[in-house]
Image (tube, rainbow, N blue to C red; front, side):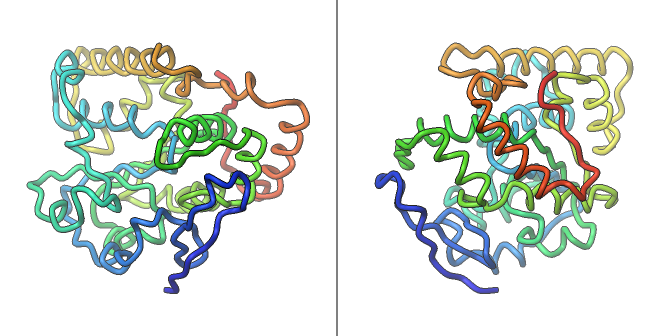
Length: 284
C-alpha cells in the first residue's frame, strides 16, 4: 500500500498541516509507519473491538460496552477512567506493543476504516462493534472538537469545515466510505452494526443486541438496570454543562445548518449514499 503526504486546504492557515495519506485515505500523522504492523496485529477470539468514525458516540458506546461485557457496577463506572481500559489501536499511546500484551479479554478501539484493520478481523477473528452516527450531527460535533483541540487550532468557519467533510478532506478520510464499508459487512458473524441514534430512541433493544452479541446472559432485572444506566449516560452526554454546544444531542445540526448548507449537504448525501439501503434518523 502506498504512503504519501497530503496538504490540507490552505484556509485557514493555522489548519494547514500535513496529513498522512495511506492508500488515498487521509489519516492522522501518528499512523505513519505503523500501518503494516496494524494489518498484522494478532487478534484473540476473546477480543472486543469498538470501531467508529470520529465523533460517532465512541465515548458513550465504550461505557455501555464496558458495563455489559464486564458486569461493572453502574454506580462505579463514573469513578473509572474508561479510556485507559479501552486503548485506541493507532494512537501513539500506549502503542501497539503494549496493547498486544494486554490480558484477555482485551477491549480495543479504533477509528480506522474496515480495510485497514487487522487482517485477521476480516477472517472472522474477534468481535467488532461498529457504531455509525447521522453525518449532520457528526460534522457539527467534529467541528466543535477541532475548535476545542489545541493541537488542531482550527479557526475556520463551520461552512468551511463542512465543505472539508463533504469533500473527504478530514482525518480518517471519507465518512461515507467508512460507514458503507462496514455496512457491507454487517452480516459478518463477528460484526455488530449499531446506530448512535438508537441509544436515545430504543436503548432497550440496543442493550439486548449488545448482550446477545457478546454472549452475556442477563435476567430481566439486570437488563432493566443496564438500560437505566444507558439512559443516564445518554442524558449526561446530551446536557453536559461543559459543552457550549451539546455535542451528543440528536438533531443538534438543526441549530447550526443554514437552509443553503442543508440543501447542499443533502445533495452530496444523496449522491454518495443513494445506492445504499443504509438510513439514518436526523432527529429523534
